[in-house]
Length: 231
Image (cartoon, rainbow, N blue to C red):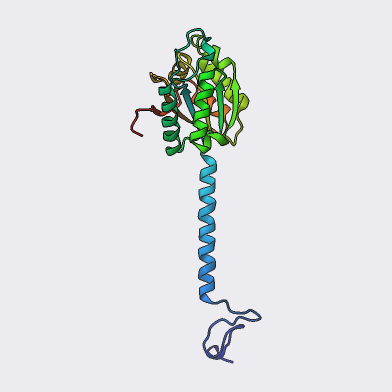
């Protein structure tokens, strides 16, 4: 047999195309679909790896209680209720935080009457606040009056009560400690009038990591929500 008559194994004599011996031909459309699925799967794996590489963001709300009443001077400071203005302001700020999607999953609150009433109004106004886990911290009332100690105390209690799956925490308390802590965490001069909320953010896979990475001065101040702010 000469070279021109030689037939290779697995070759069709009429077309010189490879034979699919014992195999069912796969339609081109299925091959394309499989290729698209593989590409989509690879892109999803890349996105997942990128998201895992970037630590989640931790959001901290430092809220000073709403305006209290001085109508009953015989009451202890701890037992003063909110004024009419304070009640209105608590409604307004809760609505703004809800619109901004800054809804806490954990609330740590001073046990003073004015902070508890502020929280009750916010829970009545915004369902997300009602669904949050709440702890009343008696030391939040006294620590706020001590120079330079509030920030460290907040960090300690947040790490004590938080869990990794909780990304937004609100601490409710008093001045001068609250604006002092907000200033120390962000490195900015933060003023918190009654019912003002400082919105802080820092990266971290846990709250411990967020405080370790951001430290004092490394938290980003995302804004201050006030009853009169245009938010």
